[in-house]
Length: 294
Ligand code: C5P
Image (tube, rainbow, N blue to C red):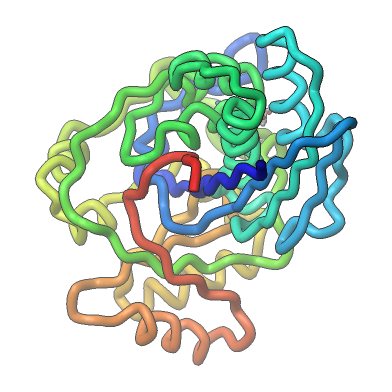
């Protein structure tokens, strides 16, 4: 019996970042939206344990640095079972792109193995295991739209009306999340201890004012990420000149460009491609569900 799971990537519609705590982690106040770019995780019964990566993940290491491997081992330990499975991950979410690709794989692996091993763990238990693996794993399990506090792992689902259409501009060269946070520390020594999400922003999300949300999107990591990535900076500049609402997703370098009501995703992508030939544009919409069985 092979189990199939689809796990979404995310964008941060709002990302307020505070000063690093003594453990090095930065307190966040963020609004996550799961979007329709998916990694597919398949898990089959096996005598041993193996993980193979395909799609955008071809060639990625499958040792303990791989979040899906860590997820499988953490689940086996939690449940007191042997980690026996053949796992295949087909990646469509960019690697080191600020879209929680690694976390999506961890989330998808938890859901897949919970089913394959017949563990019957509840969503909250999986989320607890996920939180120990990475800050974005709980949200990849939950999906939809959510407010994230703490490291981004203390989640509260948000009522969100409307469907958001995005053109996601992905880059060949990714960005290291710790490097972006380090750059943030250098730029913003005055960051607040407790970051907050703007009340007006939350109201716009609830009311489904998609254009307003896209235009008021804020990302405190953007300056740091764009300083480290000239191509992403160029995408932002093209969007500014074209009057398109665009923002860096998470720690970047993926740029989320909002598709306004009067334009089609193809038109937006064409505009970007005309200005920046060869750039990789992917149409996505959100919010979508979290990691789930197919
Ligand atoms: O938890 P995750 O593995 O996604 O985080 C990767 C790195 O990003 C951390 O080791 C830390 O350097 C940085 N980070 C942070 N503050 C957060 C989340 C991540 O400084 N809230």
